[in-house]
Image (cartoon, rainbow, N blue to C red; front, side, top):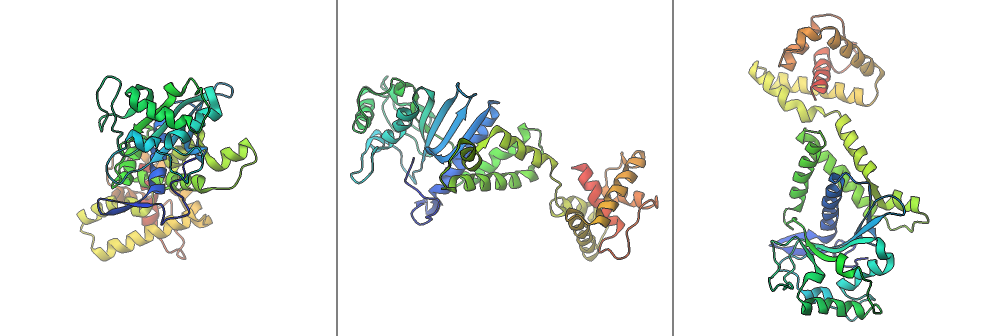
Length: 364
């Protein structure tokens, strides 16, 4: 497991980049989010484990036929990686001492099940390949066995100082370096953009939902990464440290079912009110009444829930009257005239506000 950062120690987990301070732990979370979204797009069944065996582990396939990918997530405030950095063996470090040795440890432990063991970083690896060319920013994935024999030999030598020869035959196939497209100064913004695209690909075309989806996924990964309790069973490990395809699918289902808040859709209504010469005070009062109704309905108020059902029935009964209307305020006014629904005088909202909330929910 990588030991160059701690989710519990903000002071030791920070570096500077371009005058700004970033958290290595936060970068690890965002890099993990990016990789989980990528593997979810593949359509395969998977289980992602966070800070367990390594920074990120992804298990694919059914029991007995599983392939496992291990990722060490490393950051650099500036510059690039050299082969010597990956092969370096700090004197006080516990074996395996080198980055490449820690990576190989996964292969030594899990054997043929390992399909990938890679260093993920924001910075590129600068090295010479077997054909004499140089790796750089343009290289995403670099297989270590494809490096110049001298560079590859340095890595093998570092591994062999902690592991007895011969090395596992698959080391030439699975040990790699990958530069990920996350800039240290804007990785949060990049991830939010990725989530907008991810939601769109999954049939959720409301950009407003990207922020709450990001928040929920980020919090979930932080909780799983930071959980340091010892797990006594596979089911406990999966529950505390893992996220599966089903987990992401559940988040998507909740995003689809989520009712947008008044604050999210109010600008649409405000534009209509402005066009109708509503004053600031009148608009503000209507907005507050909408919030009151939405809040009462969300908290399970029997009166608000009963009114919600009545409004939905009225919308269905008079759908031909409002289906061609593009303005929610006009549709609400038309439904008021039907006299089929009313609000008790004791409530802090009125029928106009309740109708606007229900109509906006229907539109979204």
